[in-house]
Length: 507
Image 1 (cartoon, rainbow, N blue to C red):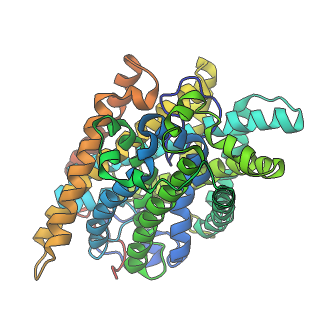
Image 2 (tube, rainbow, N blue to C red):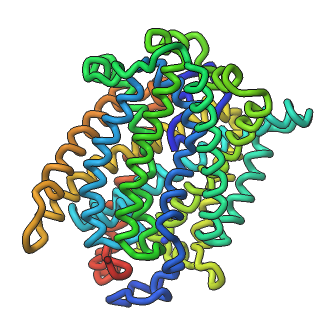
Image 3 (tube, one colour):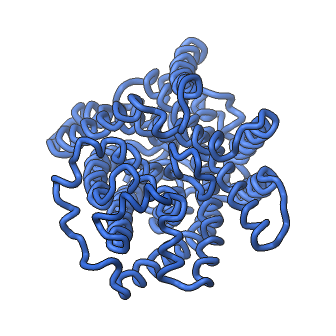
């Protein structure tokens, strides 16, 4: 996921990702079989996990539609910022992966925070995660619809409203989601591979033709990266890692258990940091370190598209345009599966209606949660159409901002929960895993939260009431989660006591 042209009110091209778990457990004290959780055990390999995470981040969309804003705010510092952000998220991943040795639950953030900071805090985090991921997923329909309508009119000479394409995508996403996580993973692997290949083709062409001159390795110096005015850029760059923690969401379905999840987490973080740093470095190489920021200011919409036109051929440009649409669809599907599992968990735990925890007997997919997520999405799309809200400047930017802020807040709280939980475990402990890595991650992420909340218009492109409402929705979701846990404690103490517990063996 990932924010597309955030804060750029004039840009209506591109797309974003940028970028949320059957029941009958209230009376069961332990969970040991597939029938207990209902999810398809051992259905995801490590490769499936990695491809699902990276597909949610939509690499082609980020590079074509989001990177121009990074360069607009940070100029040549962007490649180095990805390395620094990767170090921060790597520190987070150290503690997060250490937690997976003790925690196996499709609730991911919810389970970790519950085990570290208590059931009420965990329930609030679960509800915020559910809202954040749904905001990301649903907002991406705005980008998909706008881009698909533009492409249809240009290539097929068929003009249809954006929402018709969004609804068509919603139906397809719902179908693949129902067919199960393995089917979804196969689709995501194909699309993601194509995205990466066409970006590598562009990079290879720029290197072969020499770009604007020598490779500007000096841009990786701390003096370039750590300029005070680069704070806004870091807030956006950190969004490129959004969703990597979803490896833990599929922990109940991963072959090899938590060891597979840990490997997939580190691979995902490493790939995001190094791949985007390399690609953005080559973009700087194409324009020149002294010219990249002015080029982004002059034409952010076509900053990367111009490179495809200059360094490749017209056929490649059209393939890139088609793959942009595929990139958005892959993000929609990956985020749909993430949303489903959060809804599934909230139903299974009794924090939301338990019917959400029903799974298909054929595919073991959480079909009730999937149906609810699709109905929520189509309801929001209908409201956007009826109220005349712009699908790009409204639905896309506002939903993406809510999702990004929510997830960064969850990362920050999760860093504290990791340290608290690991410190309580008996036996010898690694100070690095328990204190140093989570502490470094907390400081970095807390700084980003402050930067983002101090100027939310950077993400929304709006001021005043819109930003207040978005912050209010996030705050209310937390309050609602806490209240749900309190009511569950009064209604069913045994179910309350099992909140956030393991749903399978940890490995």
